[in-house]
Length: 117
Image 1 (cartoon, rainbow, N blue to C red):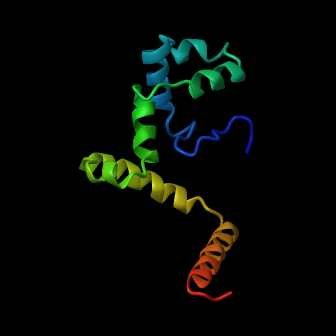
Image 2 (image 1 turned 180 degrees about the vertical axis):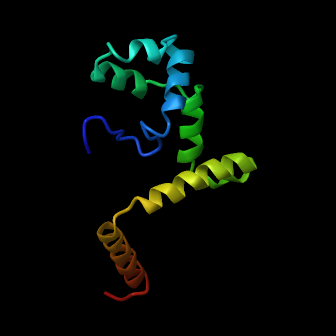
Image 3 (image 1 turned 60 degrees about the vertical axis):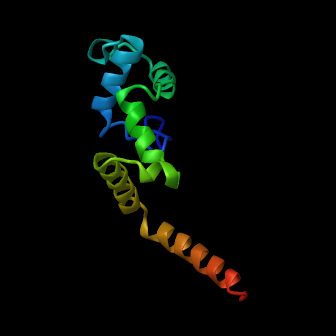
């Protein structure tokens, strides 16, 4: 990962940039179109990490990250669509060799649960 990539698994710096711009404006009163050219990367990253769940990005991240079955039962159609699109996109980004390791891990877990070795 380069220093400019997000380490948060629920947003993408490029694809979600419009949400980031909106969130910076609503939370910090900063217009990134004016501020970004002079803002240091570390400052941008620190502000981004502090984004509230009450912002556009925060709401989307909350939807994408939700795993509580009771909460998911009450999701709207749009919330399910947002979450499912993100999960599908992330699943497609897994490298084949990583998928092989993941699948082997599942295989071993099922073998162990069945009493095998």
